[in-house]
Amino acid sequence: MKIQVITLFPEMFEGVFNASMLWKAQKDTDVELATVNLRDFGLGPRKTVDDAPYGGGDGMLLMIEPLMNAVNAAKEADPKAKVLLMTPRGDTWRQSVAKQYADAGNGLIIICGRYEGYDERITSVVDQQISIGNYVLTGGEIPAMAVVDSVVRLLPGVLGGETSAEVESFVEDDETVEAPQYTRPAEYNGMEVPEVLLSGNHAEIAQWRAKNAKR
Ligand code: SAM
Image (cartoon, rainbow, N blue to C red; front, side, top):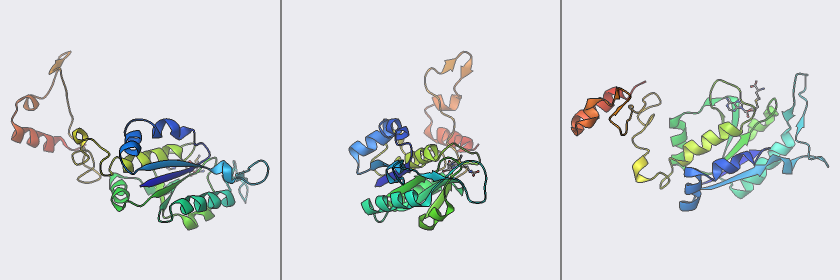
């Protein structure tokens, strides 16, 4: 799966794409992570990408032309890719949605907004608008990182055997979370691990975990 992120700040992705699971996914599987620098599609000698909103108002918007040209370039590299736009106006990102994209296996093109946002006409080439929650971030880069990470870790061969994506929060549904977990020591500063987890009784442990797999 190829994932291309259209952003004015490609350097923000260097650490995230080159560490831990995302690094391993690129090394061991067919996952390809890339950034597309929106500045390269800027207009005129100053490579302008933003302009003031019609009708007035604070701040600047990403202009339609550079955005559309960047999407077209990304589409040329991966014609079947789905286009996601990061925006507070979007559908809330959830585990079930991440799973749908991972299972579908199409490439993704992720558009990061900046400043006051983007010219709305870019939505004409967007397959889904995504919000990561009811708060406003400075740009779409952090939402894009959350989307990339949550999809890639669900792709075949990415997680090691010890960290199975089958037994974790939100697998059953978008509300069910994993039960609390503990490791050694069994007692720390008077705080004890629930006795059932030390019992070796797998049936009782499974029962305890099922009961505690709720918020
Ligand atoms: N003026 C916009 C509004 O009031 O909805 C906020 C713009 S925000 C400062 C700049 C960009 O950050 C947005 O265009 C979007 O790409 C991204 N962004 C901010 N919060 C987000 C969220 N909760 N989910 C997804 N993207 C977000």
